[in-house]
Structure formats: C-alpha cells, structure tokens
Length: 556
Image (tube, rainbow, N blue to C red; front, side):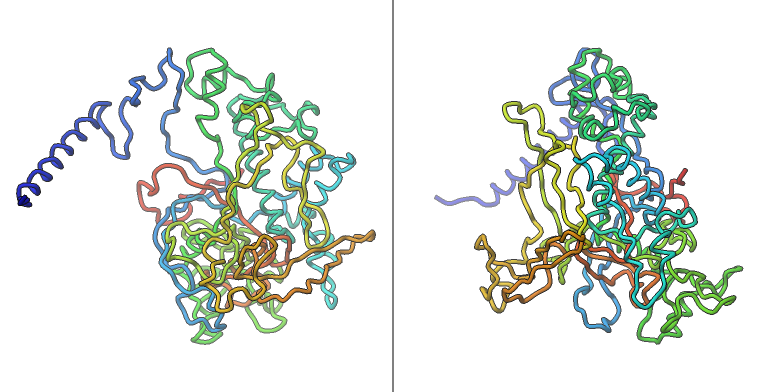
C-alpha cells in the first residue's frame, strides 16, 4: 500500500491549527487572561468561583511580594560563575561556568552580634540551661569566642567582649559554625512569622507575657500554626485568620484546612547558595577591579575611592598592606579597621549589599566539591539537597510526631560542645533522599576505582575522606580518634563552601569567584554569615534598578 506523505502532512497541519484554536477558546472561557497568567475572576476546572461564600476553598488576592526587613531583592539572571582571570594558585576548583540564578532575597549585611544575641537570649529564656532537659541548648548555640585566641597575641578584649559589648553590636558575629548558622535561620523563620502573626492580630501581642506559652515545647513555631496543632488552640484568633484569608464562612474546619493552603506568611530563611552569593557580589564588578597579574600596587589603587571626601580611602575592610599591616599607619589609616568593622562602615554595592568583599568571609549553603557539575544542571546550581518529610504519629496520619524533651538530638561542634538538631515542639523528620553525593561517586569518576573507597554499606565513594570520631573527656577537652584506614581525600559531605574575603585576608581572596571550604562544625575568626530567602512569583522587576538603595528595606 502506497502512503501519500503530502496528504498526511496537510492533515497534521490542519489538526495543529484546530488544536490551537480550541486551546485559545478554552483559555478564554474562565475570563480574560492577563499578562502573567492571572484572570480577572479566578475560576477552577471544578466550576467553583474563588472565595465563594458557600464554598470550601479560599485564596488570597495576588500581591507583589515585599521583602522582609533588612532583606534586599536581587533580580536573577545569567552570569559567569567562577574565576575569569588567571588562577595563579592553580586550585582548579573554580573554573568559569555559565549559570542562571533565579530571583531571591538576601540580607543587606552579615548577621551582627546584636542579632545573634537576640537568638541565644531567646534560647536561654525558653529553654533554660538550669533545666536538665535543656542544659546544652543555650551553651551549644553560643559563638566560640576563643577563635580570637592566638598564642603569640594578646586578644583578650576580643575573646571576652567582642560578642557581648554594645560597642560591637553592629559588627558581624564570628566564631559561628555552619551548623549553628543553620539553627539560627530556622529560629529566625519562626520568630519572623510569629511577629507577622502578632502584627495581624492572629496571635496576641502579649504572647510572651504568659510564661506558660514560652517554656520548652510550648513555644510557637510556624509548623504548629500551619498544620493546626492543638497546642495553639485558645491562642490563635480564628476570626482574624478568616479575615486575613478572605474566608467568609465561620466553619472552623474550613478555616483550619485553608491555613496550610495559603503557605507561610514570611518565607523561610536560609543561607545563600554559592551561586546566589557570587551573583549578588558580582553586582560590584563594574566598579571595582581585582587584577592580580598587574601587581599589588595597581590592584590596591583600584580598591580606593576616587571621588569625594573619601578619595584615596579603601572601599572595603581587608588586609591591604603587607605583613603586619591591617589598617595602615596611625593617622593615615588605609581602611581604619584592624579587625572587623561595623557592617555598614563601607559603601554598598549596586544591589544595596554591604560587606560582600571584605569584613568577614561568609558561609554558603553548599557542600564543597572541586567541580561545578554544569553538564547536569546550569540553573540555580546547588549541591547539598537532603530531602526530608514529617513523620506521622502512629495510628494518627493527620498529625505529625513532635520532638519531646527526651528525644532532642545533638551534633558535636569542633570545640566539644553539643548543638541541638531540632528543638522540642518541632515536628520530627526523616530523610527520604540524600543528594549530596549525586554524580560524584560513580566508578567512572575514579582512575583507581575500588581502592579502599567502599564504605560499610558497600557504596563506592570517590571522595574517601577520613572518618572523624571524637570523644569529650571529663575536663571538656575534645579527643579525636585516629582513623587507621587508607585515605585518599579530605573531601566529604561535612565540608561547606565559604565565599568572599575578610579583614584577615589579602585582596587575592576578594574576587567573588574565589572559594574556600571548612568543616560544618568548625568556626573561625574570619568567617561570618548572612541570610537569604526564596522569591515567589514574577522573576523580573517591573523596572530596572540602577541603585541598590531602591531595593533595600531599612531595618528598624
């Protein structure tokens, strides 16, 4: 049988035209479509109109997302991630790659001593260290002030006063490990949502006046609110929830199920990814140049202000001179700060971000690997995904199991202190997928496959790092156990990426493409952190922002 391909081609073309017309008619059926996918009167395929007073589903009006206090909106885009100049150290761990980053929010400054003190003070109030169940929670969250110690330097004033003295309130907190920074982000998410609910009248503003509301597991967290935990009954104002959500029904069941459908009031706080941090820092690349090849004098001159009363002064806090020169000569200071500085002491970059180059280097979310795998993903790159889910109560699938005082688990910091993994009152979670080793542990990635790189589960690991087990003796000293097995690498899932230069670094480390790493339970005097949030909705701003000031939300 002879097939007429020309007739078949015409038939397919006709079908495609008819399909296009049909889709256009369907799209017009629910109301006139607006740019961005919204409709004048939102309807669903069920035929129910949104927010019908006789219905069960309620949806808030779409509003432009506003940044939280102290957060800056960064419009996403494409950029070259990694070093674009000669790698004079030959690390080969930051080769340039083209990358797309989605829009996000990032803190305009590093987290300060004042802000971190708020956190540990709250822990001391709610989880009192005098209670045997909570004795390690407060102390484990404190920064390690002994990072200032130096056997050939007198730094007592910093180790004793840097974190607590009001003179250092607006200086970046240091001595905080990656794990501690993670716990701070979790706490900040709960406190920001708590504050927003108070502002809306959903929970009383005198919530803290009743001590019973703030002892251990009785404290507020956003998970309890979102999933209608019985502990919040009598505290949450149901009428205010209905009003804020546009719910006209007084049916408490309808109000309860719609709470979780609306999402969080304040987006979750986290550390920025390496790609996000570098993208945000490169906003300054047109104004400052870091050219290692041309020599130190040329590079240093390009770090100076060229106009105004600050002409000749350095634009960031870093080790600008040679050995023993952190701030310049007395009366003729280069940057005016021998150690860290006020987080707003120097001009912001065009995004409105302070200290992205100097002051302190910063933790990012990523697990460290020498190579960025853009062959697999070139959009919003991040290595470190560990997917988790809440654990349902046995025999009660509608409720989640909560951490109680006896089931709080801890990590061990490098100085021997215990750091809580999750506070009592939070929902317990279980890991469903750990993607930290994705595409870096296959046999093809090793020239010496099987050379002592099979772990106890029989899984092949390319990065065969030492296993770090330690004990803490009765005097509080950390004793590291010896690992007698043959090891071929120091790289593990416990290493996290650090970006940016610090007061203790020369200008070489100020290039945004540079990257370093440190164990997630360690801390240093030159490392701090800032927070980030995901952005929801439209990716691009309605008008291009030339100056960072228009992006900023001033802190109160």
